[in-house]
Length: 137
Image 1 (tube, one colour):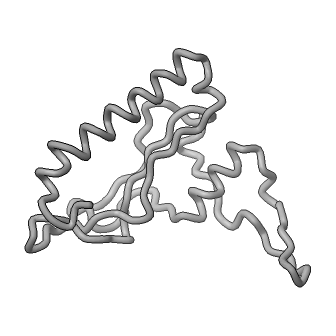
Image 2 (image 1 turned 135 degrees about the vertical axis):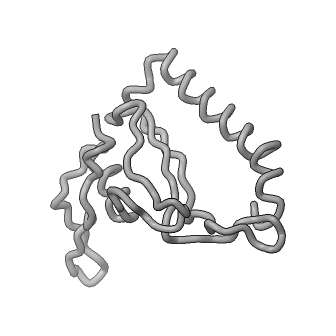
């Protein structure tokens, strides 16, 4: 975690480890001809504060975060959206987790009008967001 020593941990350990692992996965899937039918998702449940805390770290921040997608149905080499100059809030093309989920369901071929029923047989829509068109192939 990066609540302390953010820059050192990211530069020396977390960043290089993630970079090597994701690159190896995508390269392996591509070489085996499986990348076009595998969706690779790299994300977390929150972003990090734009300001450094007293421990030279970053704390949890729900307002802006990054997601990396590759493979099945994703346009390669696309950056979609941007944060403000402080990396505190979305500036362009804001989306929320509902849209991210809708994008995954879309790529899986799940109809956008799918309804699930709870134990009392009450209907609930499975998908309440909109697919993020800017990342789709």
